[in-house]
Length: 356
Length: 244
Image 1 (cartoon, each protein chain N blue to C red):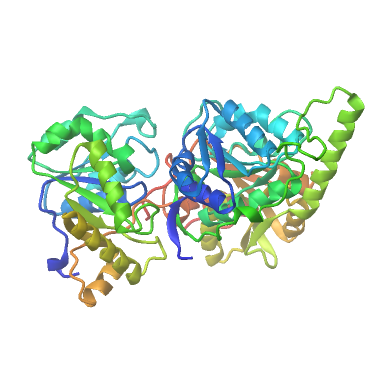
Image 2: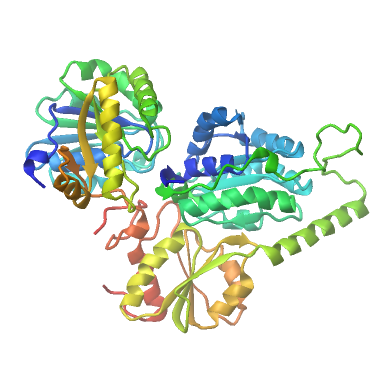
């Protein structure tokens, strides 16, 4: 298929259609509103159902229902909207329902701003709702990668019967890049869901509910979920290394679009005789702790760069242990570090001239 | 590039419309920079619907060339608020300066024009629709026609010309531009409007001119860049800037 030029948000919508998703429930919020805009236009052409809910709280509960009857369902939002969905996401994880969520992150906390940020890392990987559960969290760095990850996210959600979150930032949502789409998934090729509440007929009753008043049953349910998350952690860790061969002056750890800015800066650093590489986690949960530890062994310095005041750095510290010094550079609220800012931070950590 | 192939608009009030992501802002900014070499130019950022990639981002470069840039200043610069400045009406009605209105995408973005329609129709103007054939919904003549009709009905104005802006970012070759010109010409012919010009970077435009393509061409340099394509930018607010 020929390449087309798509905004990230539009591409996310089209990739969901290609993956066999025909149900979207959501509420507009900058900078992700083009996803509902696009789907409200495209869904009628492919027989999909687009519902603009009265709020994010309503939307996430519509997802709960849609996933419960076995449909591939999607919602997209941005930071404050995701916070509103928190309770419903916990219910969905508790009921082991496959849904795909997208957070196109904007500056926070609170109402914050509308420009790109990565300040929902903790929320995505640690605290998106109450209780003992995990989301698979995937962080694309380009529009094409967003398409590929969304397409796959529906399969991952079905395979593990768990919510999958795509964590992008305002740049992923808003920028235009050439993309190629995977083929349209025939709806009759989607996996069977014998657990879904589709009308019982002559099979045993399927119940979708997260209330366990018996403490032993709830305890057992939590350990069943835990075993599933352990399996995900064994099977789904993804990351990219860039210019990480041999010994390094500096290993920069960055995710999403930030990693692209770091690559531009490191290309200059390396051209001037430095040796720098990027470690980019693609799954933020499960985090590639072991792979990072291995790669960092060959680096004199480790520097974390994020569009927040330091969140993923917790995972980097967890990977590298307390004896390893970890540098940090960050900007927030829509201030995106430039390649020159990054080069200066690298210069400070390595003591190697950042001057151009 | 041969001067004879260079795009010269016939009117002094140019309103740039088109679907979301068709490249209106790149076209408007590059057109303003080109025309400012020979005359007094004002550009108004009328994108009220999307807070990203608006022409206010290229403000410094334009003001350095004496172009008057009208957009909400101060704390509202990065707001997603529907602010329509009274200066816009002034710019539309000012015969001293060539005025370019950079309008928001789709029919939703063009709706703001209906509030200005009375002032606009009082002056000789062109409503120019930017088309990128690689964007969803405007890949063929019927798609372009639907977009044109939606923009006309929400703006209460008539599209008078089409600007071919078909590209694939860094992956654009002469064939990409040529295919876009073919689409734009058929669209213009079927709607009875003018084919205004083809947009391309210098390399692509010269390649096509050498093949005998008569254009005219608006030769552009990309102004709206993601941060990883900018070098030599200084620290500060905003999340993309001009390349060094």
